[in-house]
Image (cartoon, rainbow, N blue to C red):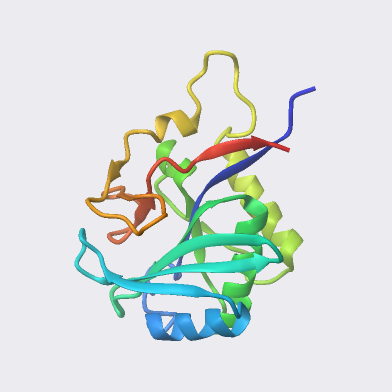
Length: 203
């Protein structure tokens, strides 16, 4: 029997296609919503050295003892994205449901993508279900990862994680955090991925 794997990768969330300003929010709005939902939220504002836009880096305690990192850019009305770093589908699903139900305005539409998809050549983000709980959301995120053949690998076969290695590094990084990287041309103009964070941990 194949070992079940809990894949860690990077997930990004976007407004619906063709309506990039649908969220109608700025970084300060996101910070306020994060602090209200996750009281111990840590944030830092900076300017992207690649795109010259304001970026919000955040760290939240998703569940007791479970911390995740992310970042967001909302240069409205042009575009918006929120990226989670090195998370499982289960962790990403909890955040995604909060984002959809508590931050994104009706009809609560958003799309998602992963760095595994990027490494596998997948160019189109997937729509997130507009309703349902954590289980329905995590099922869709897991289905996304499974479609990329990221759960089982033949001996000697190159995995999507190995193909992700060439991502380029940013010139600077936050103290104690993984350096940021950029993936030009994938999933829209503002997509940026942290470097070398796609890993697998046996459950």
